[in-house]
Length: 148
Image (spheres, rainbow, N blue to C red):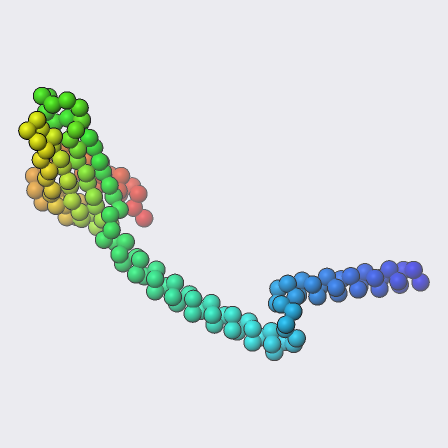
């Protein structure tokens, strides 16, 4: 008799535990399988709508990422012996297709000069100084290794 009572108690505890887990997953409001199926279909429809929104935003972000700056090179240097410190610099900004600009600032006693040069497919459109060549080559080398 005690064994039957223990089995009944264990069975009641399992049913209670199963009902508790069912309610935590599906909620207490669901009374039958039809309501459960309706809720599942409704949830899937909402997920599908959200997924379409995310996909459209992802496509837009992918399209603008191709033309955004992805590779950057920078170097400070002293091109002239008569000036002190590394006041001059070269900055390289390239997109995914290796198009972009090289911006160089040369510090002189008389003032500062700034030059901008185009880069298309990794090739400069104007003649480069040795410093500019070095920064561009380093940027291209790093950029190719980091490409996906």
